[in-house]
Amino acid sequence: MGQSADQQPDVDSRPYHHGALRSQLLAAGLELVKAEGVGALSLRRLAREAGVSSGAPYHHFADRAELIAAIVVDGHELLFTRLETARAVSSDAVAALRELLVAYASFAVDHSAHLRVMLRPELAEPDAHPEVTSAGARPIELLRSIVQAAQDEGAVAPGDPEPMVHLIWSLAVGYVTLWLDGPVEARCAALGTTADDMIRQVASTVEELLRRPRT
Amino acid sequence: MGQSADQQPDVDSRPYHHGALRSQLLAAGLELVKAEGVGALSLRRLAREAGVSSGAPYHHFADRAELIAAIVVDGHELLFTRLETARAVSSDAVAALRELLVAYASFAVDHSAHLRVMLRPELAEPDAHPEVTSAGARPIELLRSIVQAAQDEGAVAPGDPEPMVHLIWSLAVGYVTLWLDGPVEARCAALGTTADDMIRQVASTVEELLRRPRT
DNA sequence: CTGCCATCTGAGCATCGCTTAGATATTCAT
DNA sequence: ATGAATATCTAAGCGATGCTCAGATGGCAG
Image: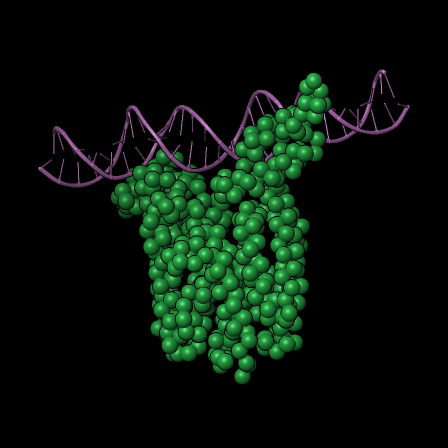
């Protein structure tokens, strides 16, 4: 009796984590961001919650920015797979652009902590952590390829695809920013809808514009 | 001799500012944000730069959030007048929407420090400073009235204007966010254009979509 | 068993937000 | 003009943060 408790104590209660502390700090950091915002994200607090001393995290992350950079890279990968799926289930490029916007918003709902950190790039010090920049470039490349397909379909004017790429990209970033900051939710509540309905309506509006005949 | 210097010393060198310290802190705060970002904005540092003790700012601002809230309110007023001008010089509602986007971007260029602070609403603690929320609502109301005018002109589908309001609003917020964070500038440099040209092209793309005939 | 490496501790430094008690300047009524 | 009331500032201090470093401890390979 008590044998398993002695031989297999909770990883949290053992002082020496041996590899587990790093992932534990990352997970606790995400929960903390979700609960209290990125302002509350401190290595000291994560160490306290993990039951280790305040210096312990520095054996796994050079500094706070490195932990944040790890979260950002994870987030960009999660986002990228969602965007890929959105394209895969779409029948044409215009529908893919609509689904891209919806997928971005659903990523915001399901991974709000990741997104909150991703939207504060200065916290990750991208100059010191180039993997952040390269991870963030992949979703844009995907978006560009869809815009080019939309040009081939005639929905987007031929020529430089960048304006339309920036348009959709800005729209996605702006919508989730406003959603995380509250004003979208507040307006939707006043209007009797939800933020989920709203992004669908916004995305459908984009689709309606793109499906109008070009003159 | 030396009379005027004795009677009118620099306001900065006088220990007792009597009303001037508040505005001096606000101005120094904006310069600090422009130079080093909002992360560097601390009351202690502003006090140091003003040549005053670390407790002095607390006689003009209850806390850091109150100074930030004052900057945000100023910024929203500056933005609102720009948007009003953009509408005034536009011949129709669709052109007004295009100019609104351009004006938003030019506000970002000319008042980047204000905007950096405005885009971090949690720093201003809007729950404790309701004037922040009301100041931020005026630009949206202006936008909504233009969208409704665009509906009257037939460029926007009739019905609920909110989806188009959120579309333009998100687009503006997203574009300036990406510009402040660097990726827009980086892409434009790689493409041989400027961020100023880019927002004009994006805004013109929106206009082109809105001027297509509705089916 | 020994030695090495990974990991963690604990103390310390500088900075920050904010509070408090008290000192000083300005203003205003008398 | 004088003295009281008010506005403003100082100096010291508390708790928290990021980060560093010397040294202790755990676990694994030889």
